[in-house]
Amino acid sequence: MDAPILFFDRHFLFFLAARGHMATRFAMEPRRASVKDMIESLGVPHTEVGAILVNQKEVAFSFIPGNSEKIVIQAISPPFDVTRKTRLRPRPFEHVRFVADVNVGRLARLLLALGFDTVYSNGFRDSEVATISTQEQRIVLTRDTGLLKRKNIIFARRIRGEDPYLQLKEVLDFFGLGRDEFDFLSRCTVCNCRLQPVEKQTILHRLEPKTKRFYTRFSICPGCCRIFWKGSHHGAMKERLRALGIPLAPEEERP
Image 1 (cartoon, rainbow, N blue to C red):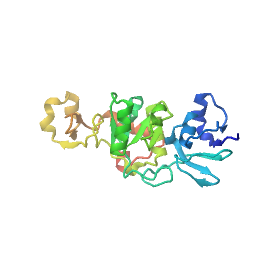
Image 2: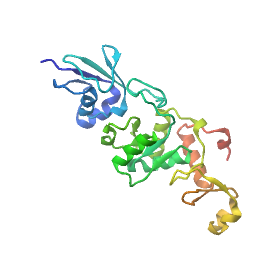
Image 3: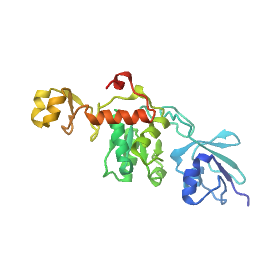
Image 4: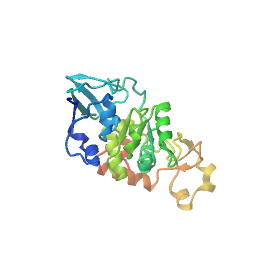
């Protein structure tokens, strides 16, 4: 009996090679299964698929291939607009916001430092990440390929890089996020709450001597009461961003 044949973009070699596959063409065993199940059986999570073509027509993940059917699996082409309706994702998100798992904790902190709405805890279980993504319309960020095979996760990015700043650039490039979306030190990097300005005099007892001397503008998190200011860490972060070619707003370019 003839089998359906899957043709993958070369972009998917990242996942296929992890399973020991060096080819991008696969003759599948004849069985009644959805194309999503066939794709993921080869190690590719559905969240990385941009389009599925059968006879040059787009089909959904639920499509059940017939014998001898030739199926082309296309990768997502950045910038990926999660607010746009597509054949594979008919219910887009209203906003760009993230949930990160323990594998990309430092990336989550960097996104929060740039002002992106990002939920993170090193105690999240996979099921919690999936539930938060569904209930709060959040894009999942992870280095755990298995997590992304959960059917209730719709929008996600399997992070390739290892260095947190390279991971940040990867996310910004993939989702088309630029300096217009940045809002430095507007969120708590621990609990994601919007920071509020606070008078220096009211927090003097909590500041180190050098901080009291050299800084005048402070913010406080209404959730965890942590205090924030644009110190040397802020300047170091801007230098790393410039080195990666990530543009900053004019006011952030000033020392």
